[in-house]
Length: 172
Image 1 (tube, helix red, strand yellow):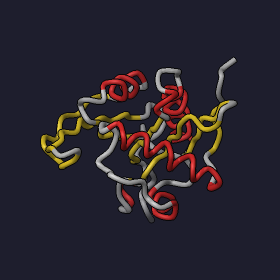
Image 2 (image 1 turned 45 degrees about the horizontal axis):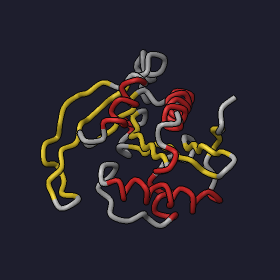
Image 3 (image 1 turned 90 degrees about the vertical axis):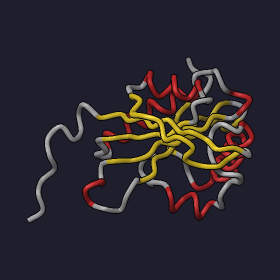
């Protein structure tokens, strides 16, 4: 039996989400952000149907969520992945379980493409995504300035083999 469980993320988890996001910021290799957003900002930026949390006996270990990439109808089935694991729980399979739940949940929600942007230095996250069927599309060189230097971002994509195989119904 696993030492943690995956469950839906709830608004009452906001402080845990913030704490783990701050761990990611502190790592220097998880995000361009320099501070955790207020809950209302975070909540508005993420889909409500694909939010997961890993919880163990000692509390929250990590979270994963999807953000829409565009409000345009053509991109309704495309979402960006966020997976964050607490600094003291990395390497215990939490990220694997969270990303697995996110992939399953995304397909249940009709998402046909997941995308991620990961710093090249974040080799653990790159390996995690590739284990879940993401492929590297390319590198955006010097796309943003963070941690006092220009940063590259590797773009990854996962296409569902179940959702989006056939074109969606055309509007009437």
